[in-house]
Length: 434
Image (tube, rainbow, N blue to C red; front, side, top):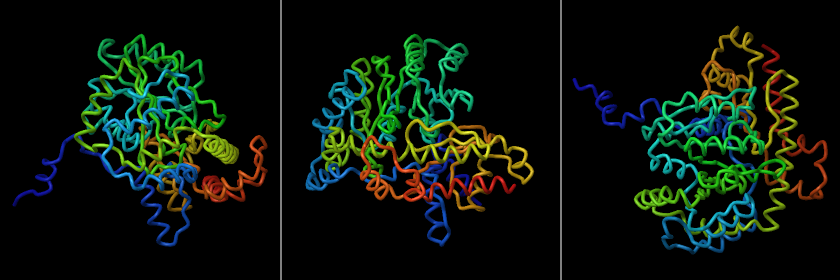
């Protein structure tokens, strides 16, 4: 008898062995399924912006719905100009439109970058769930620098120096991916750290892919790009999914320095043989987003106020329950450290972060994503919480009734973000009962 399972396995690219559906997408589908069954679920698993796409950007999409022609592989020229101008004004770098490429989401562009680049991929753990699976699919050499709670789950100059000292070769090309404000940690870098990391990368011939998709959601509006300090070796990744609330529109951007244009050109070659170009109406609408009008600036101001308010209240509740967590500095994530509960969790048969999150979901309806999804050790009791389970349109409308420079009222979160507060209290109540 033919062993069909074995035969089928042999027909699959071996680089896919052990890989499944992205954990963020899987927990989102599971949450939807449980809700359809009538269960109350607190959806903290998928990091999707709860806020609506700004009205002027939606209007631009409607107006450009008739656009039907294939666009240039690298992207619509007026959009590339808008993206370059966006980075010149926001980040203070000399970005030029001929060094911008538009893709169907920054996720696809990260994959193409790893495909084109012939060298070592350097990742900081905890990291976004798809960086390492993409590298594994492509059979890349992967090096992981493990951070910790004590260094805010970030790459520090000292961690980077230690890694460089132990690195097998100082001559082989390397591409390091940084993401800040971070997913899953919600924190960002100081200017001093960025300068030191930039200089170390320059000295050791390591290029940086700076994933700044959450840059405009820095809670104080003070995001700093490492490209300011390493302009010749940094590629900036951005897009519409987070700061513009348009994840489903699938539009990402990479902005290169002139010295790395050879990477852009090869990415464009692969793009021409795969997705061809990004949807025309979406690209025309994105021009309006990247122009950053006064309407967009006001939108971002209110969004930051809401995320700051809810993030800080969540942290206060969690810390009261001895869950270690850092103050959020950008985006809409908290990375939770349950290490204070290790003995209690072990006593009830929980020994991994996945088991912790599975049990929490079953007992309370709270869906958070286990730390091992972010390349942390399985036995480390850590998890990511995306505090996005609230009506963003309603919260935004309420925030707009309050003058820009005035704080939100004390009861704002309990009125407009009640599900988030309830879910966090569910976590702490569950732990205290163990």
